[in-house]
Image (cartoon, rainbow, N blue to C red; front, side, top):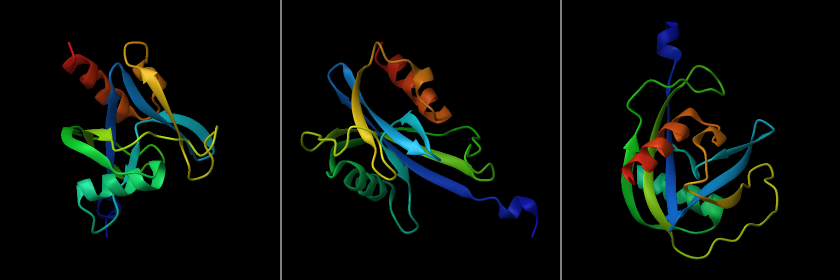
Length: 145
């Protein structure tokens, strides 16, 4: 088996949740560091894309999403920055919360993020940790002009 055959795809699904002039951002601990990113995460084997997004929403926010529409799928090569071997394919959906969101904690803990609403025109893409999130946020802002 060659090195190229050992590399695999890592498929991720994320939600752009907008409420008026605000966008929902997830504060999470990744490898012990606090990062800002869009809600969502890794697709599990056997899941459809929306099914995986709904599972992530239930795990992280204890609710399902509604009015889910495709927004963007990665169209460039992005190596996973956490293990360096996987190629990321990220799919982003616009969506709405099904009910009011309550944080269980004030700060993120191991598997439980904290969610914050940020004013879209004041939030900077550089604040996001993940390169594809930065790209998608720029695309979202451009689509609103």
